[in-house]
Image (cartoon, rainbow, N blue to C red; front, side, top):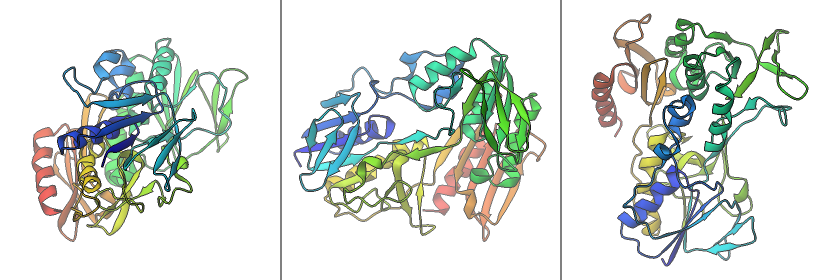
Length: 387
């Protein structure tokens, strides 16, 4: 294999490039990214960076002594993958022919229809998004966060600490019920009320009002919530449009095996755009977490370099964390597979709890709030039980 193209220059793409060199690949390595920035860390964008406690230098993922011997093509978008020539076509007319391709194009924030061009309306996915939102938050005022997921909750927490008047609007009856289940989703989302942040649940957003700048969020039940700033946090869509017609199977992202292999030989996928097969559950799952983007490229690169002649392993249970209102929230596994959840430490009204999710008596997920040591112990047991 003389040339490998990594399409995507965020954590998953950088991790794949590192893994290629670590596993002995010494050929040409081209990393393509649609942002102008070198790889940077995204989790702090909604927390420390947004609060102004760290700067852009602290977000850098590369180290000073790192030498990947890579060609970086930044600020240019991939538009197609030609399976005949094994070429990645770029928006500026160039193409990169490669023997192997790593797809790591990530996901893009979903927007609110009709909000285009209205000042004061933001999403938060990229460094440029965070810069623009941070500048707005420093002016204070009334913030409405549309979407009570983890990113929305972190933005609300950060804005509250900065002194803004904050309201969170969530269409589901219980925020975070998808990743955490209804019971524990309610426990975690109660942090908003603990700090005087308004949480409006079970109601959708009809639209926004304002001529040049947003002045209110209009709810489907007829209410109007005044707003100087709006953050839309309603999830992300995998960036795979450029792969249509390539022969790479797509379904909620790039359809992959348990080791990142795709339907096209010589092509693997990692990160937020990759819908990996989970042999434990017998389903495909797209994992949008930092640890998945960091860990899974090792298996995908091994598959790529072996020409697919490897036995797929079992991906580690996904792990993610969140910091909200001074509380450290950690979660590992899949709550959707559980038939019971029990609080092993603390009580439902506490903010220092540990809960274990089980299926047929076996642990399938664990949630910790300010319980790092106990969570780590349970996470190890979970990994052993699901291996």
